[in-house]
Length: 142
Image (cartoon, rainbow, N blue to C red; front, side, top):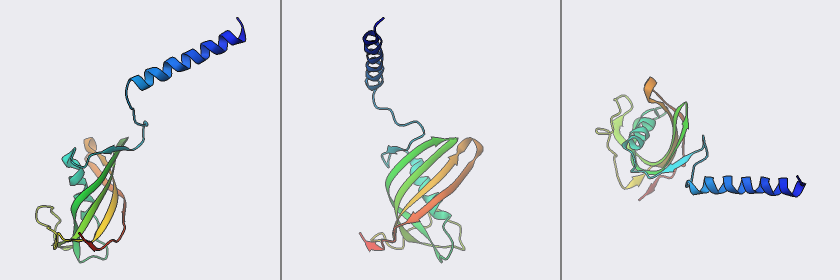
């Protein structure tokens, strides 16, 4: 068999494989971050409130979530959630327990921060932790 025949056969196999992959529709990168609509799942808001409830150092009042802005997930041995949200200072002191139903914003007009949290969740083991929490420090009115 000529080298041209082998090369042509190899190219044909690659083209067929590429076509088959694209015909199946878009597939995210395995282990990569996948974007979601913020309203797709109630757990997104639940996890954002969980993240702010863990931020107590140097504060007199808990912050609370005003609005989810961006949501991404990553499947690992469990799931990582990367959530971006607007916060405001709440009515609940750090000495109280945090509850999203009770800890309401002192003002819905003032955005204290825009924060991004990464939460690692393993529901079958009932394990949840905030692995990263950063804020931009906006402190602006809506």
